[in-house]
Image 1 (cartoon, rainbow, N blue to C red):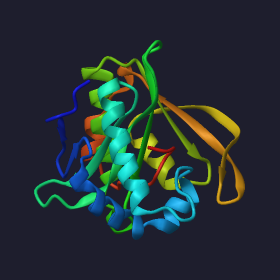
Image 2: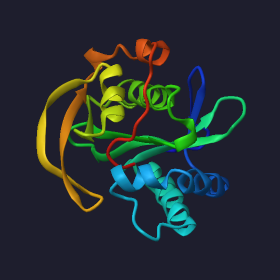
Image 3: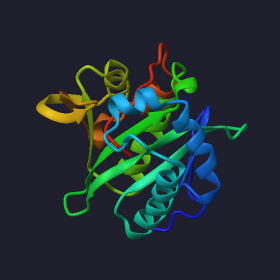
Amino acid sequence: MDGDGLVLIGPTVTLRVPGQADVGPLWEAVGESMEELRRWMSWFHEGYSESDVRRWVETSQRDFEADDDFNFVITERGAGTMLGACGLNKVDNANRLANLGYWVRATATGNGTATEAAALVAHWALGDIGLIRLEVVAATSNRPSLRVAEKLGAKREGLARNRFWLGGAVHDAAVFSLVPADLRLPVAIAGEGRDEGVSSPV
């Protein structure tokens, strides 16, 4: 799929395929969010650097073109401030399903950014590109991320024991699913009391 020019626009955020100009702003966002990323994101490692961000951007562009993974950067609508990333990974084209993941920089949490971004990607995935199932997998102790899934209208299907090794510890995970019939996502975008979080890696 050609991601050039693809933009998902919500009330307060804009999502687009990452480019080389995003490396610096993304690295700045990672830099202020290391405590949270270290705790919840398996792709984050000690010594994570701007070079890692650059490789992620380059890989994201190739994966988008190959219909493998579909990653977006999240920016503030209008101002263009880098807020984080959201996307689809572990794409199973044969079964038309994927994992939905997201992370938001530390200074942008608490205002619904993750929920809005995830809703935009879910609508695009279950509508425009024809996927039939999305999964959100989040550590059971990661309450903010669980709240994002709940506000999307995702159905909690069960517990995956010992699903994550994060921060030197084992974590169980809650498994949620979204299918086209579940989409009450406009409510999630405009709803009250929104939370932030990070879910399985993007």
